Image 1 (cartoon, rainbow, N blue to C red):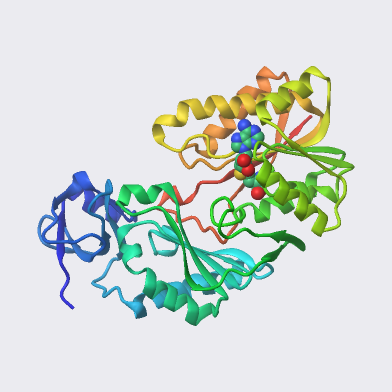
Image 2: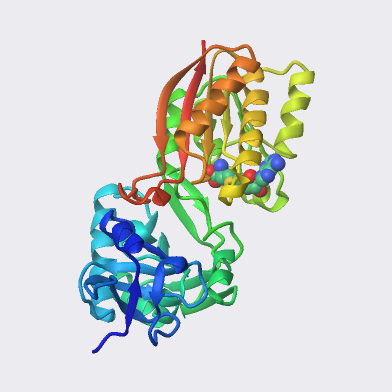
Length: 388
Ligand code: SAH
């Protein structure tokens, strides 16, 4: 098969040489006759081959590198990449039936997410190239996993930058009535169609265990969603107050608690910022607090406002901690670096007049791998801190 060719400038060539898979539209010199979603040859100004990439006609990211070689992006190629992703998960996520099976750029499959929940798969094709291959990818997944169902949760907003529709579709099989997975020995119900992201949060799986290791006394889980942290804290703590602003998430969390025979979690629908201020006014104290808010910075321009949000929430929480108390504080905004989060929390500790030690500096679970040369793949920061 002959490839279409897209010519890029020296800056883009240097970026590819530095190990980053994205080429921006401003660095494209000549798109040739590339059509939306084509796998194209990328060449430098002198015509030297840089590799094969998926082309997007509308996104600011015009090219996503798939390989440094000339490659025919067909079923065999995709199956090879999917199999290496799978081999890696067998090593890093052996004890769970819920994990991220494919994490886009970090698995050299830019634009593709696949999450596994027991015998159900949920996928997202987030660029024109992967979207064009959706049927082929589904075929590969059927062959590898023999799943009961494959759902395409293509309702992610980033698809609109690719000119792709926002939709949820069933690609294979039927959605079973009750889907349960086991994470760290606890059972969680999964809503493939209506849940946040692709169902439940998988990236905190290892941090749940870390939090549980340090937890005791009275605990507060401020953004509990379907109860991930709260359920893990329950066996270690007297009581857990689990808070979320979404009633639907709390219903799911409560049913997860019940399914695991846990009865010491109190669920509360509230805005976490207001709730923390109310607890401070009432003189409440906690031994363990978890802050896992949604991404406050969804873009670079939102970073400043986000830092104010992180500072505020950490300040309010630190004021509620007993001496010796532990706070697990997270940020899933990739625009907010670990250094930025550490600085914000340090400032909050000064304002709260607390001396705080760092017990652990953590990140996303290993099934969401981080590529050394692609900083965007590192998005989750999780600090375990103790007031001394
Ligand atoms: N800790 C969860 C994931 C949290 S996702 C887990 O491990 O599964 C962020 C959650 O924060 C969402 O459930 C969202 O409903 C909730 N949320 C967003 N803004 C909030 C606010 N101001 N107060 C309380 N909850 C909020």
